[in-house]
Figure 1 (cartoon, rainbow, N blue to C red):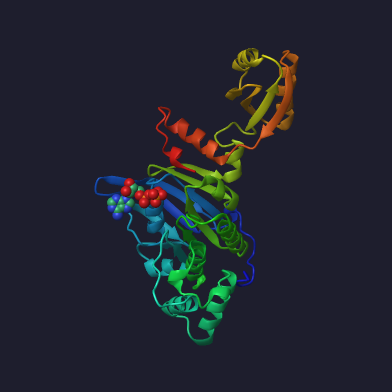
Figure 2 (figure 1 turned 180 degrees about the vertical axis):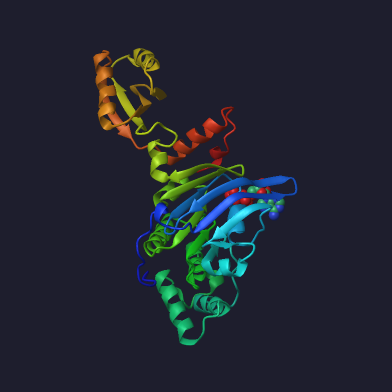
Length: 345
Ligand code: ATP
């Protein structure tokens, strides 16, 4: 299974390639609702981009405009250099679209369903047959070729929809909440499919409100909050807290274990340190956030704690969760505490 076409060359770096997608000052209004408020971004061939935002943030609207299914109120979208409004048919040949829900057809099995869409895509004869077989193999659908499509589990249905999208071999894939409602096993299978497609050099744009999942799958993250982009960058930079920091500085989260009744002296000491803040006080220590340009600088913080007479019995770095990084970032944008990121899981 999972052997669709030969593997493509590795993804070119942004500086060495024309963008696969170029979105400029994109707006979409629905009567009184300004769903997308002037967003701009570029996606390069081979990138796997996670598009994240709370319910109603504008993800589906943006994706539908990229897939030529919705007209922008203002702004421009180029896919593979082609304008979605002026060269719609050409764009549709490049783009694969997987909506968050899809219709199933009664009285059709998995093979017939894919064959039907392969015909609709203009594939003929032996070529069509070979493509359907190839897709069933890739999406692990062969064993259920005879199964009625309206009797498939959620995970199988997703794989079928995925296969349908891949039939015409699109270069740019837009997937709206593809992992929603999948059980853990189906999610892992889905992630494997994404990884294989990325290895083949496809460009993927995947929406979700589940940050941790996209962080694992995607090399780049794009956050949308109330129709506005609030972050576009590497997942790793966000997790490490290097975005928006001075060059070289990184945010670290550290659990510090303290002996005895030393919570108050510890708080007092931290309050006098630059680039250090307590995230949580605990019975036997605290969780700290600190800025440090290197592990040596982090070690220096520990040395100073000990030299200050604090009874440190533990100093343990913790991976910063993407969810926390996102909430921190949105907090910076909405200091009053109105976080649209709070609804994220
Ligand atoms: P979700 O995660 O819930 O799917 P989303 O981020 O995909 O949310 P959109 O579906 O793009 O958000 O919706 C953005 C805003 O635009 C919402 O306020 C929504 O109610 C509104 N909206 C979307 N489509 C329409 C429409 N056809 N008519 C009117 N309002 C719409």
